Image 1 (tube, rainbow, N blue to C red):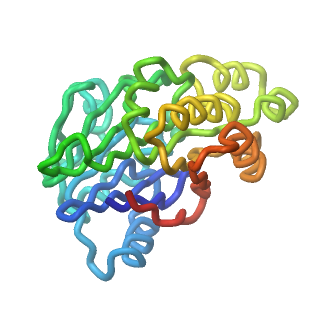
Image 2 (cartoon, rainbow, N blue to C red):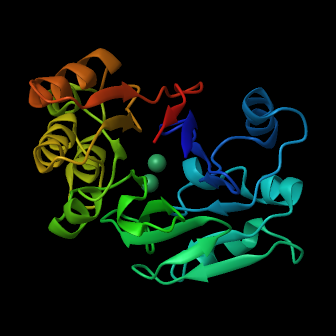
Image 3 (cartoon, rainbow, N blue to C red):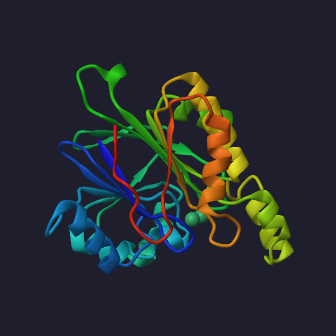
Amino acid sequence: MRIVSLASGSSGNCTLIVSENARLLIDVGLSKRQILQRLEKLLGPRPRIDGILITHEHTDHISGLGQVARAFQCPIYASEGTAPLLEPALSSSEKLLAFTPNQIFQVRDLFIEPFPIPHDAAQPCGFAIAEESLFASFNARIAVATDLGVVTEEIRQRLSECDLVMLESNHDIEMLLNGWYPEDLKRRILSDVGHLSNEAAAQTLQYLAERGRLRTAVLMHLSKNNNRPKLALETVQRHLNGTEVAVAIAPRDRMSAIFTV
Ligand SMILES: [Zn+2]
Ligand SMILES: [Zn+2]
């Protein structure tokens, strides 16, 4: 499997996953033009997409949904709680499929397990994704968990089964507290249904590194105002000292590196 973030943060989120037989997008918070441009760079002209997974209904994750779904004519997968909120963006021609969190579904050769994440949206989910193989326990697995206030024990267990984890590292707590955001917005971000701090991401990744399976961590959804890529990277690397885990950043406004598992 190969995975690349096309953009990550409050101005737009979109991630591409490519397996032998499947190409999936997770979230479509960019314009159709931006998504097509980046996909053509990666996949060549007139790229095919087999499905769009939606984490939650916030604008930075769905702003391009209608146009992108029509362009690719592929199904959209969203949780039962999220799906009805996507309908206004869609016409009758798009296929919207609702999934139940914790129930595995399949798109071509990819097995997708959505899991609940705590965030102030209707029914937000992260995704653990594995490639089909005869030897299920050796499958490469990735997880994407972004926009979550806390990492619960259930989420930690999910992530600990993955080789590559894309995890939110939204803010530095000091920068947020000392910054210019209104108090109620600061409280929302810091709450259990807000966004994950660098420190919380670092502690989670340290736990995962100690469990042994994690090889690559990609830090997602960095705040423009309350974080700096270097600071997020240093905070996480401090916790991963002495481990073999590679850490990278998903930039806000351009593609990340391409990661392979
Ligand atoms: Zn977001
Ligand atoms: Zn959100």
